[in-house]
Amino acid sequence: MATTIRATGEGKDMTLDELAQFVEDARKAGVPGERNIRAELSMSGKIKVVEVALNEEA
Image 1 (cartoon, helix red, strand yellow):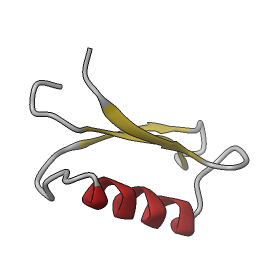
Image 2: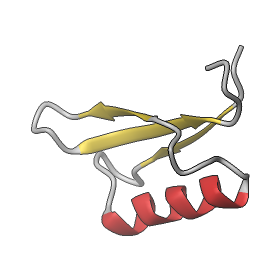
Image 3: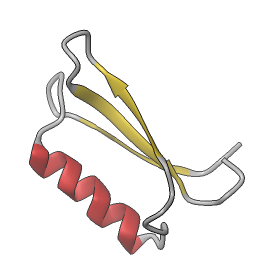
Image 4: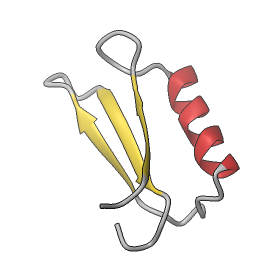
């Protein structure tokens, strides 16, 4: 199982500040900038969850 950093919005959808904190946390953990992220969207197309793998196998 891959180790990941995962972030969700406080309410239903993520805010720009929450997304920025996710990116900052991923960078601090050493995740390279070219690594793809995974996102779950709400029915209205807003971001609910983002996730990035800490290692390349994911």
